[in-house]
Image 1: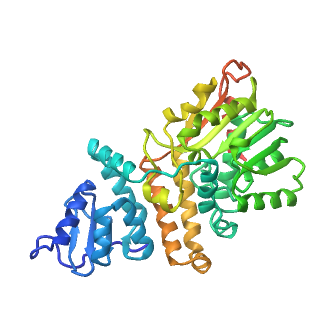
Image 2: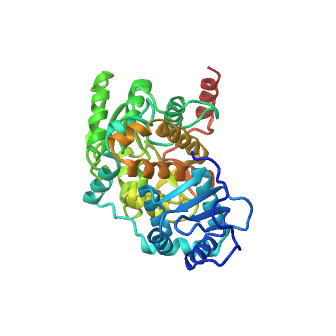
Image 3: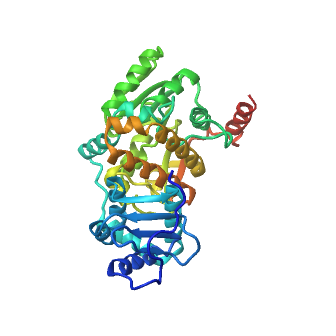
Length: 419
């Protein structure tokens, strides 16, 4: 990351401010006056918060960039940063964190701003055709790109760290085992997975737990990779990767599982997803949904929805109940592991920075900067509680074949930690 900011330009209160500086000061106030310093490069003026030392300096290249930022800060900041018209001197994660915390401290006013942003930037809908377009925009950037920073597991979801100093690949395996223990997965279990990424979890369930798995995904690049890995591991007869939408799932299973797909479903499709899960597991099966979420309903940050995750929406627990209630599915357990996602993202960002030269050769400087901002901002969102990470375990309403305690989850975890 860049070095800590040093004072530059004309300090506050020295001479007469330009109109641009006064407008920028108003923008700073609308953000809750976080400890940030702005520098207008073409005038040399700087505008800083009165609330302590700045955690970073935001340098704006020209008047056109400032006008865009004033018109739509939620989208234009990220676009200008990606294009190199905004530079951040200091820690990008800390900059984003203080903005999130300052906005949260505004209370009702922050809520109004959030609702206005929601009206201006409505997420794209996840119809059958729309979902394919949305997924293609993100996941089909290429397997080579993601392999640079996801680690050996190629798991693009929150890991589970048995200790804070655990490695990324260790934590991804621990996450998969954590989920499998919750589901009481065993030999012979028939599993359907809705949204399988590069196939890591499906292969893990088959290789380590003896399950047979049918995994659905609409990303061509991911399905191609997953099938090749299944063949390499000799698991082609135990794991079937289906290039199709979750809405076309058929068959009877013991387990329904979805890791990191719900964000792409859209609340308008939750009831249908619940019907599919209920039909899949029947009267005695069990299921788990692992998803990014929020404490209260709110749209994903509009810049991320536009430039990174088209059509994505992180639900609240209340909204997730729209999956379970209409289909008489009983929620057995809810766990929030958001700090594990913050750790996961910090590992990804370090690996990404190590591979920046290769990313630049594969794409361009704009993509390098855009994804740096996305990863840094995501760390900030989980560390400040703007985003959550929910794992929800469920079964059919009248199923009594459920454990009385969570010992089956954590007793095995304690044994693994001692190894």
